[in-house]
Amino acid sequence: MKIFTFLLLLISMNSFAQSYAEQIAKHREAYMQDFIKDERAPLKKSDLQNLHFYDADSTYKIFATIALLKNEKVFKMPAFNGSSSDYYRYAHVNFVLDEKKIQMTLYRSVALSNNPLYKDHLFLPFTDETNNKETYGGGRYIDLDAKEIVDNHIEIDFNKAYNPYCAFSEGYRCPVPPEENDLQLAIKAGEKLYTGKKKHQK
Image 1 (cartoon, rainbow, N blue to C red):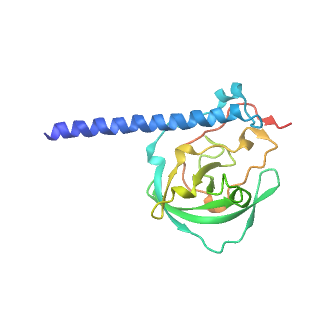
Image 2: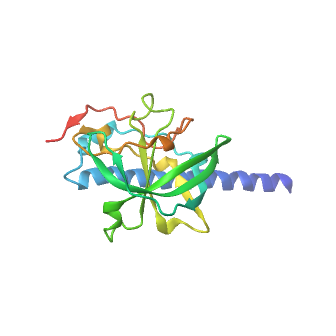
Image 3: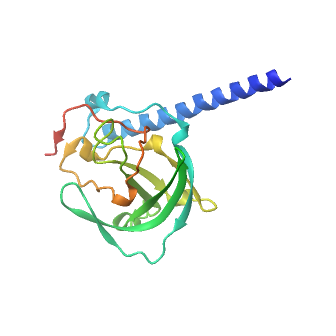
């Protein structure tokens, strides 16, 4: 009976791994299709072969506790092109990854929060020890939704981390991840370095 139970567990785990990998594959396909659909995007269909990703790894799909911040003042988050945009610190998220206790900050864009379509959008920019080696030197982003907060928890999936447009082309206003989201570990999940020639926005 124990052997049968063990085999069922193995089959279940394998099925989960396959279905999770399929979920991430679909997410990445939609991500790439967005470049094709948006005429203002820096990449065209022929450029997509130069996009690369780590294999899906559910280790990097975590459930973080969330602590909302109150009375936060608007600040200027600098962009790589020298400009800046108005944001405010929305919440702290806390979790354990690679046996390390980690705290990160979620942000809300003032401009997006005034747009009914994006009023619940949360922004999680970060840097980590893969930058300038396996991933873009300027860090990566994750998009979250305030409606996904349940019982003071939110799912953060680093497999969905993506490069800012500045990784592909000059001329975009890409926020610089604040120092408080500089992770002292390697996040081997999500999008890797773009291997195509960097473009110049016309």
